[in-house]
Image (cartoon, rainbow, N blue to C red; front, side, top):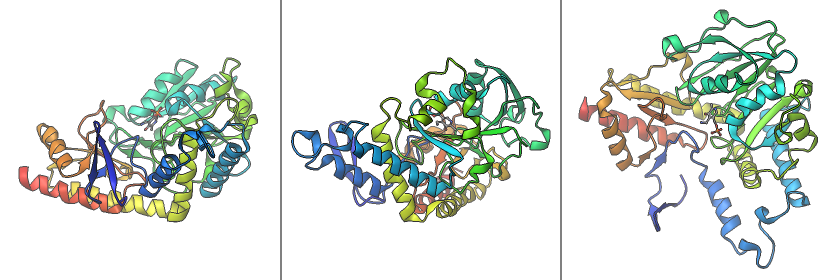
Amino acid sequence: MRAERMLLTGSRRRTVTPGTTYNFAGGPSMLPASVLAQVREEFAGEELAGESGRPTILEAPFSSARFRSLIEDTELRLRRLVGISDEYVVLFLQGGATAQFALVPLNLLGNAGRADYIETGYWSHRAIEEAQRYGWINVASSGAASHFSSIPKPDGWRLDPRAAYVHITSNETADGLEYHWTPDVGSTALVSDMTAAFLTRPIDVARYAVIYASAQKNLGVAGLTLVVVRRDVLGRAHPHTPSTFHYARQADARSMLNTPPMFAIYVANLILQWLDREGGLAEMEQRAQQRSDIVYAAIDRSDGFYRCPVERQDRSRINICFRPANNDLTPLFLEQAMRHGLLNLAGHGRIGGLRASLYNAMPVAGAHTLAQWLGEFARRYG
Ligand code: PMP
């Protein structure tokens, strides 16, 4: 936890004692304390406002050597951390993962005009709805009939041999499911929306043609969308694809075809430095496992007081979705949890119930505190 956390409540600044609050928001989510301190230092110091002295990074032209070296360093750090080879381009775009729901088909459908999607919950459904505006979309498998309680087994996927790509959502942020394996789709391009699980475990990039992720979960703040594209799929874009979202054009321009999201890139750079200091993706994986084991164990030992609808093998390590068996208790739970310093535990607006999001910045102590609280609330109202 940060040494001292300031919460802005209206016009008043309130200082909360260290360790008393944990933010379980689904995203934008909590940032590491040391990164927030660095940001404060950069922008609250004497350099602020640029009236005199050196301008802040936000006041420099994006074409300046200073910003160029920041974006290059960010790319390099990301390549090293994740293991992204020169076979791939790394793009720093805007528009969020939601924009990618349209931009993936625009950039990749090509002459085939058709693609396979696997429906595993709310976010893959949104991706499908958007893609349907651009081509023939085959929902090769859907977990809808079982209320998205598991990821459909790949032997039941009805893949279209002429599909330009297969799209999956590696972690369903609203429903609490996660792929703990990488599908084998043969020579077809595999595309993954990794928004919630990106940087929470090592990945074998070579298995994917495109990986995309909004930054506001594990890579910093909203405004930046990371897109990693294998070079061999770069030539397929529809002629009407906007230049700023055209993968090949943005690759040629090193993501600076127009003004990039400079602040978000600056924060991403700090996050990547933090990840290095903390031990990299293997360490993040170990922590994610530990945190989620602690919380699921509390749910499972509640004798049915809490229910998690997701089958064990597909449970997300990142977004734990559950609810009291007596759903009438949910508002009371949320109110009391908040007073206990456990913030933002409401489920996604479309799903309801409860959700504990455990991104990289969440200390393991946060998971312990939540687990204890789950037990306490169940004893009180069980
Ligand atoms: N995909 C997934 C898996 C998400 O979790 C989210 C955001 N919660 C999105 C897409 C949409 O991201 P954005 O709001 O940045 O467009």
